[in-house]
Figure (cartoon, rainbow, N blue to C red):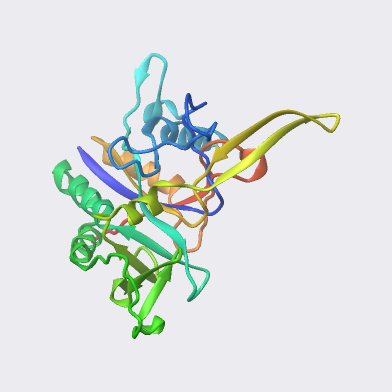
Length: 266
């Protein structure tokens, strides 16, 4: 079996949800990794969105790739794990940021599959960044704020910023050994939504979403090289040919628009 890995770049806010919550103040939470509590896109949601895209794009018979009620398709979809999240900053509108455990999970995924996969240089880069994570710092009276980068109101050494990372021009790598960093990556924005009937509120609910510019990592597996190539041809945005794929709910108000970028051919 072989694997192709993809980065999923969210162009707009995304709500890949779990359905109604049974507790808490958020009525419609997003899907999460059961260990880290960081956002993810579950395999079933990802496969459903891609199947819908293939059908609408007239990409041929979807049954051999995606299967139907009577048979399996040739492709296997891994959950899309959060790889980087935009964090607001005083230096500029935001920095893309990731954490040590996110990088470890990505590296372990690649190594544990033991498949004939592409993307070696990319995952070697993630491993290199693992040893360069930073934790929040309290500024002493004599400290200069210019020596630090401010992310969501917390200060970090500027050494956490890395350039030309293949994920983005500048990436902040944070250690999630501390609760402050874990909170930044687990607590997503929440919006209040309302259902009106003749201007009268019928239902008010609170809905969580993953902000635009977030990046997820996923893998697609198959025994058949030609099926992986067919999938890549119709899904991956390559050389300026942008292919927009909608994932999750609220499509009518522009949520969940994404592009897929295939990781390396090294």
